[in-house]
Image (tube, rainbow, N blue to C red; front, side, top):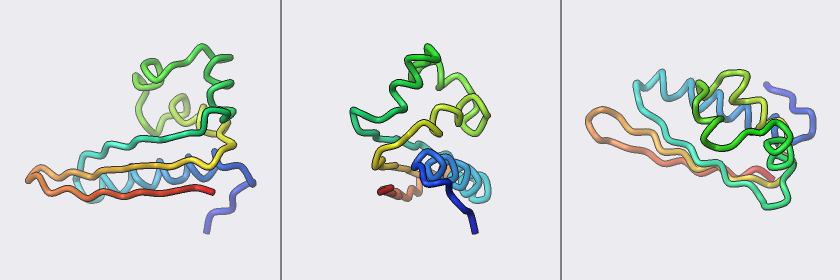
Length: 98
């Protein structure tokens, strides 16, 4: 069991790590889209750190640098994930964090 500290960024980071693990275990490529609210603290954090989607995208998805900005999330976020195998089979997953 994972205990979260009451901020959605902790939950999102855990989900990203689980999605990455599932993709590796199933030998699948994974594409995830995180949808935040406009007033989410993540955007303030990214501005202070001079980060953008492009600069964050250069990191390994589960690296400290890539996960760091997720901890700032304080909104009810949605995560859309698609797992795709080499044979073309795909599975979609939708998670809403409230």
